[in-house]
Length: 275
Ligand code: SAM
Image (cartoon, rainbow, N blue to C red; front, side):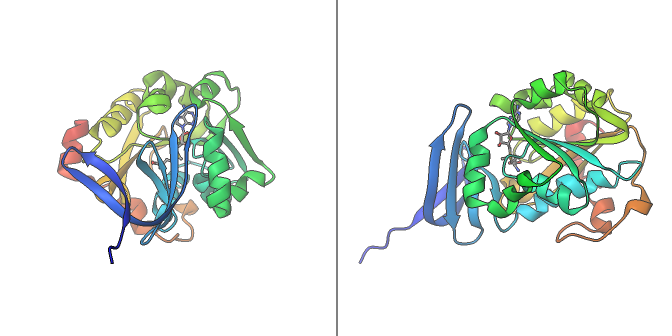
């Protein structure tokens, strides 16, 4: 008897890819912006991919979503009440924000299909969009930030990599608009890719934000399903250090040690961004 195995592979380079053995492909759809696939994998549960790149898996999404919300939360120089999320149509970031006590959330996602697909396969993450105080807008986050008069304590860029519709989310003019939309003492954070396989993202984020904010601080986390497992975020603020009085309960990945330790960068990352 011949056994047929199915695999999804994300290619990191010409010579390397990460493969997930899959039980089934649950969906594949081409939207106006990108191609979305959902797989049921053996080791990571349901896996959402966009244009062949892993966006999140059921079993390790907690790392990314805690790190993109809880770290910046503690850098706001007052108790944060409001947040803007750009991207994040899977609902994971808005869910964590809501869990840590942020009631007013505006989530701007460009692709309505990402939300619809996530409602179907990750309803525990998208249910936040029905909550009072959470406002989901389907539009381009670049245009939204250029036009909004609203101000936020936290602005979180939970985007795809700097290509296609997300490219402008890594530009200087976008960062300038983000600064204008922050309340005094507020914090901006963007996911900035794998320093090892996607050096362009962290370089664009670091150089673009420097000169606009007085403190630009990249930090990293271990996310097994992302390229190389080593992922970066870049935080920018005009306030200086975490507000100790804000320190609260740990998450599943995040704790006080991680809050401090994730800002210690390996030498090759420092050299990449020129610090
Ligand atoms: N955790 C993920 C990662 O780092 O791979 C990101 C997940 S989230 C699904 C990324 C979202 O950003 C996608 O749904 C995509 O449609 C959205 N996006 C890309 N460009 C955008 C833009 N200009 N405005 C708003 N949303 C955008």
